[in-house]
Every structure is written in structure tokens, then in C-alpha cells.
Amino acid sequence: MDFDFSDDQLSLRDMVARWVDKAFPFDRRHALAKAGGAARAVHTELAELGLTALVIPEAHGGMGLGAVEAMVVMEELGRGLVNAPYTAGALMSPCLLAAAPEALQAAWLPRMADGSALVVPALQEKAARYRLNRVSTRAEAGTDGVWRLSGRKSLVPAGDEADAFLVPARVTGTLDDEAGIALFLVPRDAAGLCVGGHPLQDGARAAELQLENTPATLVLEQAWDRLSLAQDVGIAAIAAESVGLMDRLTALTVDYLNTRKQFGVTLATFQALRHRIADVKMQLELARSMSYYATLKLGEAGDARRRALSQAKVQVGQSARFVGQQCMQLHGGIGITDEYLGSHYFKRLTAVEMQFGDTLHHLGEVSDRMQATAGVFA
Image (cartoon, rainbow, N blue to C red; front, side):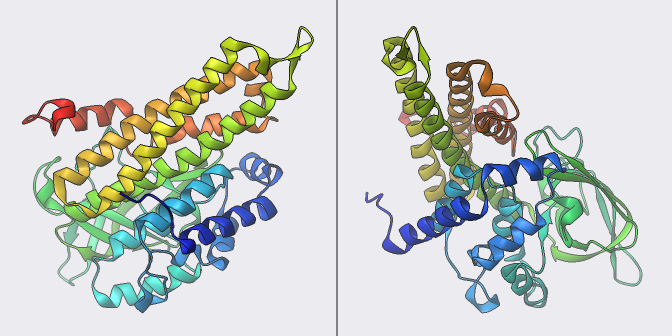
């Protein structure tokens, strides 16, 4: 199989890398994090580069590109530690809206493509423990034909900066029933919607949504399959971001070992430390290969895709933890100071490991889908 990138994909990578080097230095990222993590301005700059239009169909003002191009972009955004709701607003939301009625797509997708609208999914609820099917938010159709939602959503990415939300809500069934979940679009100014923003540990920003009899537009009545796909798109995106984060953190650590001296010689001359860096690079390449695997598996359906993405999430999570911890130890005390770039990569890697289900959660997902086969013989 040919894993070489096309000329267009390499050009896309170079464009994003140049923007990161020129417009998003560490000082800017650090200042944004200290100020609370607001990143709408960064999202607007990505839109000016055309990146928010990446996966949106050409019929709605987008570029109509695919998962590999998204992976290329996410790697570079990770390498630059870019603080922006790109995964949620530019990759997952277009995936969800692709199943919407044509009129709704025409109303929102062109604005999302040019960056004038930020639409983010609000998938997580308290006590759900990463289970996408655990939806207690309720939706009822009124006598006037308008759907109204009541419930609460947590950790909505850039929620207090978004213009609208894509909200799963239960129309039938019990708490964990996949068949009873519908998807709705809720504008930011909808009556009965309360949004409370807060900063996150990694310098990003999220919000809590409280919906009380809030009017909403139906996107899809049977939404489970589409929600599952959108979450897998998110997993593949943050896997690629993690590869970029680990790649840059490893390079920082190697540079440090080549310049820091102890007993009159550089740290890189100590064989034990060279072995540890070799282990770090092995974990990085394991994560890279599984990121490619996750991206290529997005085109498959059902359990095969779900299992592949969970496998990737397990390996990337394990690699991220190993690389992050080893690189911090190799730096010593300076590595965890707020003024040092490496500590922010470590914090972001730690946060990414928790997104869309932590390593232990996805290990269980893989196990549940291996009941007819035995591990490597699948």
C-alpha cells in the first residue's frame, strides 16, 4: 500500500506549517491560555486560509476534501499547539450536518466554510462516562410543530464562542437506547438556552449548556449512526493532532539533551538517556501508524470502523502518556514550568487522552468487538 502523500497534500501541510511558524508562536498561545482560552479569532484566521472549508462540499462553498487532508492539517496544528476549536467546528459539525435537510445545510454550511459561523457539537452529558448513547436530554414536539429541548450538556468545545450547537436529544426509549436519539440544531440566541463558559487545564475553553424548553430545528430523527461517525471523525482528528504534539515534544527533548551539560558533557552522550529517547521515538511511530490506520478506516461502516478507531485511540493514548512522561523526566524540573514550551505540549497530550473516551474506555470498546475472534488473529 502506498502511504506517500500527494503533491497537493504536501502543499497543504507546508501552508499550515508556514502559518503556524509566522502567526502562532508560543508567546501568542501562552497569552491566549492565560486570558482564558478564547480562540474565535484563531478560528477566523484558519478560515481565511480556507481550512474551515476543507471537508465541506463544494456545493456549499467548501473544498470537498477528505479524511487524509484533515489528518495532514491536524498534525500541523498539533505540532504548532494551535488553540482553536478546529476538530469540533470544522470536521465534526460538517459531518453531522451532512445528514441534515438541504435547506438547513444551505443555511449553515456556507457560513461555516467562510468562518462567519462557528457550529459545535454538544455531545457529552454528566455521568455518561464517555458513552455517546447515554442521553438524558429530552426533545418534545409541541402542538405548534416546534421541537423543544430540555436538559444539560457538558464540556462543549468553545461553547461560549459558538453561534449554534448540534445537540443530541432523546425522543423515545430509555436512557441508553440508541434508537431513540435525534439530532437538533440550537442557535446561540435561542430562548431558554443558558451557556456558561470556563477555561480548561490545557489552555482551551469549553462551556456548560442548560436547555429549558428551548426551541430547536430537527436535523436527523434517527441520529445514532451519524453521531457515532462524527465521534470517530473526532477521534481520528485528535489522533493526528497527538502525533504532531508528540513529534514536536520529542524534537524539543532531543534539542535539550544535545545542549544541556552535566559533568562537563552533554546529556545526549549518556547511553541510558539515548536508549530512553529511542523508546520515545518507537512509541511516536506506533502512534503515527495507528493515526494513519484510523484515518483510512473512516470510510468503513459500523462495528469495523468503530473497532478500528478504538484500537487507534488505545495506542495513541498509551503512546501519548509514555512520550509525555518520558520527555518531562528527561527535561527535569524545567520541563514542567509554565514558561517552558514543553509543559504545554504535555498538558495538551494529557487532555487529548481524555477526549472522546480515555484509553481504558476504548480498551473495553475493542474487547466488546472481539468476541468472535482472538486478538491479532482477527
